[in-house]
Image (cartoon, rainbow, N blue to C red):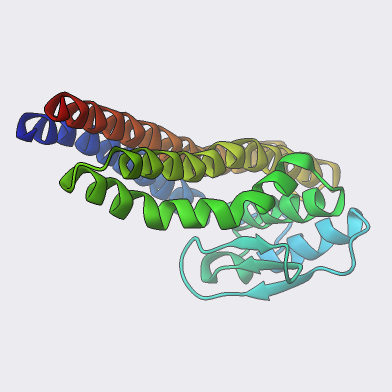
Length: 231
């Protein structure tokens, strides 16, 4: 089985290279537009508040959170959480990221189906991501095919969450661009910059799905090696 273990590391390396390349691209684009001041002079927080109010949403709070690119919308607490580089920044990148997170708030407010599905499978996805490898590895070591299969199916649950996340993220970016344009918060030139920032961010989710698909392929190859050695 050692041959299969060695060869599958190529899939791990490929996934890591894709992730690093996409992350580097994201950081480069974000850093570029982080230095470009928006014509409106609005901060990320101000842009978020205006977008929420324009959408008729008054029960969502905009909060500051520490860290870099830690921005997120929490449907449980109805909060748009903006990072250090976004909350008080007047850059084009900051306004774009803030608008994106507001896009999630609008999704929540309108009962956007993919968002509801993603929220519903969070517990199962978390369980799958934590348990798939221990079960799979124990199954291989002790020749227990049922544990091997269980590990694979648990990983599929985690992968399903990532796949459902894609339409949620792309839709939030689409909403963000539309709301910024309709609200007159960005110029035509700035619109292109925001689009680049949001597209680069979306690609990180695509890279994560590709990486997980490669991991699934690795599990299937290893389980095939297990079956052949067990015969």
